[in-house]
Length: 76
Image (cartoon, rainbow, N blue to C red):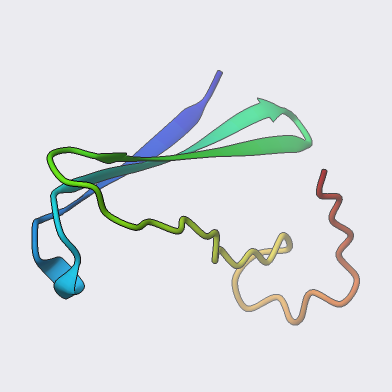
């Protein structure tokens, strides 16, 4: 199954938050028409608040193809 994983490590004190935090986001093509996003954050050495959010923007017709007003998306 094709997928790509992005990883980020937030160090203790970054943005004023305690502890090291390891974050991953994996996009997986489940089928020809379905993509799944799995996100995970692991506090490595201290308790710390975390709120993972998805802010990806897609234009399914490609770059410079106009707006997305005729696109349909299903989220479940």
